[in-house]
Length: 115
Image 1 (cartoon, rainbow, N blue to C red):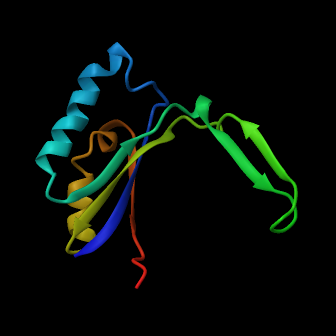
Image 2: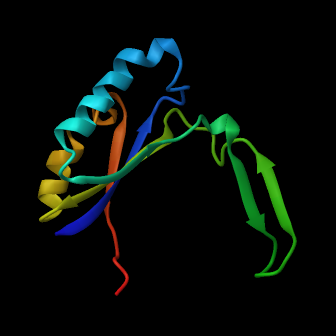
Image 3: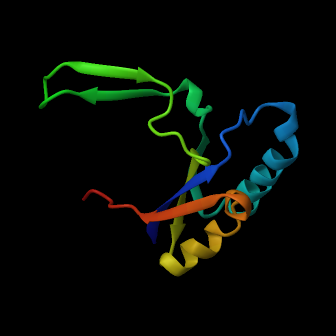
């Protein structure tokens, strides 16, 4: 089995807010339905909580941090699922069931497994 990372891009919201309860329930349903293939997952806090880290020059150079998102966008990286699938086609079928695919986007990328 290969591994694929499904990155979810949706509206940048607080998933624990009461108004997100119905949509969050859909994500929980997905997690239960695909528990055999999803080996890890997480939801991220809103981008307002992010810290961007840059090193000026090369390794060991001054570290510069910025509060807030890396880029202002309509949709933000809001979570991920690590999926085990036979091939990309199967991973895409699973990703299409993630609620983020219905109104946002899901980026599916193969994972390089270190040997």
